[in-house]
Length: 394
Ligand code: HEM
Image (cartoon, rainbow, N blue to C red; front, side, top):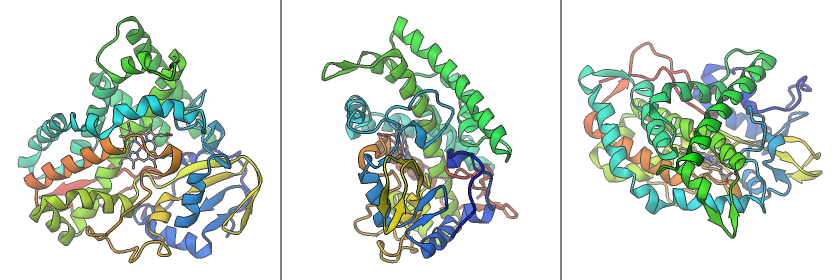
């Protein structure tokens, strides 16, 4: 399989032009095609890793498959923390951050999250229709997250537009998209500089103030480090749960039996969340760059090669998963890779799981039967799979 040599230097797959909408809506078919060509596929410039075993191997070996700043350009001027810091330094940051996102800490947010989602549902339930992305999937996690971090919720729309400017830059011209991403990155830095400086002068009860005073093994975070954590959080916290809710509700709207299973027994919801994370893999892939000449699944890879790690393909690889293409809420031992794996495994997974569970519980209690509005062809975005036109009727 070959797409010819790239004319551009390696950059984030987020900057690549839009592929076919059908393929975005049904990525599992594309994943199968790639695996048909090999568990590891050399595209003359970028290597695709599609097999479950090989994806796990990449994630376990950051010394060979680095997440450093060269792996992805997303408008940043310094490495994003902790995502673009390789071990061993990486663990110094996780020691500070992990306790903030631990299950016990997340549990304290559940009542507030439930109240928020209740308000969002109450605003549309009597309309018998809504755009689920705009009415629930976007406002819920972004409000929870901005409150937690200490960014003003009143500027939510502005922040969402900035995050979209990095993750979904407009147009198809690679150079113009890169310029747009860089300009947007500068605006995100400006917001963070403003907030971090304000918290240095006057701390509040929020994560940014907490980062500024946290100390582990004698290590405290500098002003720039707090900004660099904030930049990553801006992207990770404002998009992923929205994408997951969109993908889940779109699936459930089209699969009556699966939806009925949740409505009849809400106790199924935690397992449904895991299985839908596996099947939909809303963060479809992550990127790495090789530090040395290496070999993976029989494929030689030169040093400094960008590697696209296809989490969605690993999660639907028939060599690793029995009945990989069946969505089974009773699937035993569901060790999917939707939150990645290894040192960089998602910091926000407990928060994300709580938000997804609570949103599905409340939504299905209020709106047990719903469908996608006739005539709508769902428009999934690339990379992080949001659905802007998720129009529902009930
Ligand atoms: C369902 C929702 C989510 C999904 C599917 C998801 C997915 C992922 C994935 C795949 C990675 C690994 C990246 C890599 O290896 O290169 C990751 C890392 C990360 N995620 Fe999430 N994420 C979600 C929610 C969140 C939330 C809500 C936050 C906010 C706190 C968050 C914060 C992070 C951070 C900080 C990292 C970097 C961890 C590190 O490098 O040590 N994520 N996430």
